[in-house]
Image (cartoon, rainbow, N blue to C red; front, side, top):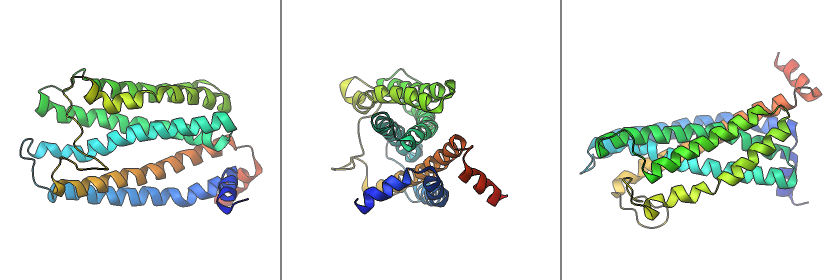
Length: 249
């Protein structure tokens, strides 16, 4: 067996994953917080005010990375759920369900910062704009996955049911992505491109990249921590968990 394949196979073992998550979750949290701190400081003190929006544009350094993460986490959750349904891999069930609360938090941050940004730009806290409305539906989908997972006592059956909802819900992501193109929208069009030229001033991009990387690192830490906690709950009757608890005491 290829060493990489063997490593992933071993990682699926609950005790091995527990050790892996315990080791790397703090690194994800720590590096993420440091990276985001640099991004926030740079965005506040190292970037000039926008010629149209003034200083209110600075909220994009939170809004945009959170919006990207809200969709990326849902896509990852659907991917894990698909693998879990097809190959019955328990760790993927756990990782899929661990994604949901984190993705919901990013989506809520997206909606809140969008409203704060929209007030001075549009003159209102909320408008049933296609981008805002579809992002709100995304939040409801996250809450639906969380609620369904917690409504069923059998953890594996709950993960399969909630995972199916995530797989079906992934069709919303391209609608969110292209909503500003398909419909007449108050929301501004795409100004930041990962590949290709962005319409933002180049001096404004570096702190945004720090925030994008920081949110991803923090997500890794949060995902590992939540998945580890769920893994321990599922394995609570096993000897290795009791030995670990005894060693920790």
